Image (cartoon, rainbow, N blue to C red; front, top):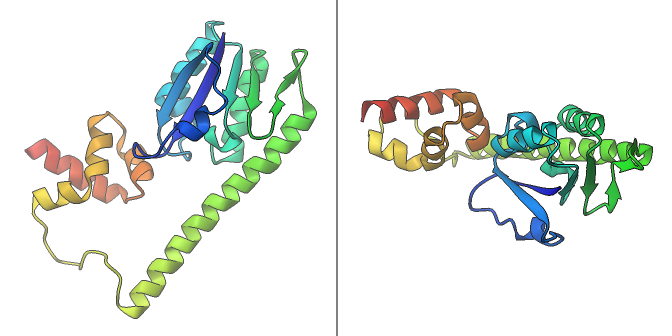
Amino acid sequence: MKARYIRVSTSNQKTERQLVKKHKDESLFIDVISGAIPFKDRPKGKKLLTEIENSNINYISVHSIDRLGRNLFDILSTLEILNDKKVTLKVDNLGIESLVKDKPNHAFKLIISVMANIAEMERESLLERQREGISIAKAKGVYKGRVKGSVESDNVVLQRYKNVVKHLKKGQSLRNTAKLCNVSLGTVQKVKSIIKNQ
């Protein structure tokens, strides 16, 4: 059976671009989660791996390699699992498959390593630009962060961190929620404490 794996970081992102090459006989597995979370730790990623373990899936399509992860090690680990189970991975935007006649495609692994490295560098570059932007804003005195020592009401905090509330209610761990929402662990703990006391 064939499957298509789709990942978006937030619920307001569209999946259409990743569905362009979808075939009617593919089962869909859609995760709304950060690419920084390892594939095996994602809800639908886990489910897909279980289906593979049960020999229900033997072919997976993804729009691009960064849907599997932003970390080279995680991507190659997932690829290793798929190869061991003789599951072919097709990357649409590259037009290549991981297996040829049930044997690993060495050109695929080389290209994927390069692409995964680029995805990882892009993520690091984005975070670095974000940090630089905050530093510049602080230097200019226009940084919009909360003033230290100021007190916000519980409702204001919950309103400000709607995404954190959503992920916590879905059962995400504190650390995963912090990564997904790009906030500190302390913020997530604070939000969880407010929810618990309401």
